[in-house]
Length: 582
View (cartoon, rainbow, N blue to C red):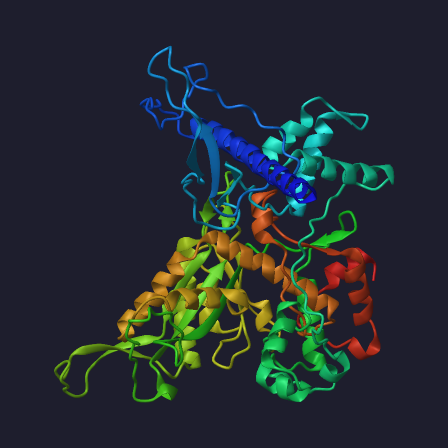
């Protein structure tokens, strides 16, 4: 009897387990049916009635399925196709027939064939218990997104209370969940309650090496300038890798510097530079500042060699392009031509358009002469353009009297003053201001042209040496040339391409350099100052002249009164000393 009771208990336990499984299978089937109807809506075909068919509606002469008791175990997704045995009765043929004994039929429940999208993480679809759940893509909220979200919520809040629907609008606008919006808003409120501005910071701050090497500044300072000439040399001296040095340069711990040799200055040169800079100031003080002269009546002249090509150049080629081939007999004797350039400051009208471009002209030192010998390129006696390599005082006088002065008279504006100063350097071939031939030509046709010399060893006081020659040369090297005539044509066309606005900016840079000369007490160990001319041009416009602080000028004048600095000079600053009462 006890054995029978044990077997009965075992059967009851098994039946309860089977009923639980059947309940789970029915629930899964119902969920799958609902999902398929929503996902793939289409008319369903009627199943033919037969002895082995399952009635779709109760009450058609067959026993309807009874809802099994609720499952006692949690609902889990089957890892394998689940087979469920369901009782199915035959369809009665007549009303008098009794339904046959229920038969067992295997019903196989499989996962539907849901198309999955292959792509980055977060774009794939997963099937969980008959339903597809599209994962939300992971969105990293940086500082900008968080701050914009806080500003959006502040606009839709009153006394720290959000308006109705503000969270949903923020979630839709920034494509995040409501929980994220609440979390950001809570953090912002905590900051505001502490009296701090609601400035949110993103969590992603990049990867930082914990074992990153630190620069030994004392060891770097002990290196000589020659040992710092390249990263390779510094890497050996500091016992680090070149990549580490590159990272230090990238992060600003080391800065590259290109050093240029500057003219050596004596005390006499420095005092002359200071007096020259003071002579360019107007003898008036306006709100604690002293303005420079406009420099519209000064013409700067200087000469420069222009080469056919550079000894070394850099190009950017495609992988399959051939490298250009350049050759000459000797790179020490590349074809070159000397040019004399003369420029003044341009004039602009009220509308900003130039009324005088300031370009007097650029004149090459060349001569045309017949070929002495026959060659494969031309017969003997063909007229050729040759460069004049020996520029003497007679050549310079001829250029000044027959080219520069006539060009000034022809291009000078009618309304401008006829008192003109030609500024030149102290090169040996240059003529003096008392040259009789120059005086005869300069003081004719109503013009009073004077020749003045800038301080010795001071190329930074001349417009051409300061930057204008460099601008011409950069345009010249963009053009191909093989002969002297082509070289002359390229330089002249580059001179014509430069705009009057560029020339006017160089004059402002000159005045800024004169200010630095005063602060350095005549020295040249300064950097060319940047005054943001492009920004001034876009906003308030470029000034006509710059100004110097009154204290700087007064200190320099007092410095010149010291016995060791009271050297005689040709540059008169008496008008300025009188204005300051010194």
